[in-house]
Length: 92
Image 1: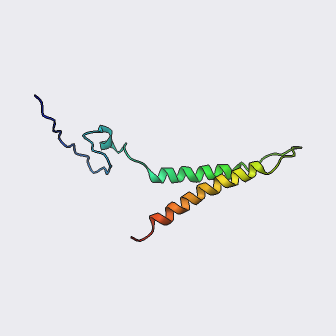
Image 2: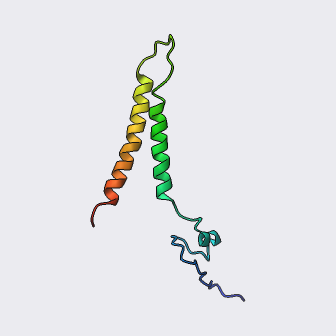
Image 3: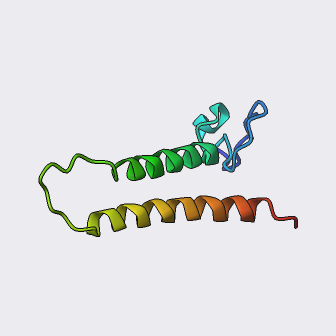
């Protein structure tokens, strides 16, 4: 009968939160999250939301509801980024 013990695989210096023996792609760095990528994506989305405030309103008499939602969503994203920055840089 085969044993149930597994050998630990060498990760080659890649820091992950999973064992490369259980997840072979972890040795290539494919497991885990890229915080920097999420931050860049959040900034891009916030800028796109704010860019949507500029639109061509030829003859349209619209209310401010759409603008308020765009500003609130962009402010929420920026607030989350600021909170993350502050909590990350706090001395422990």
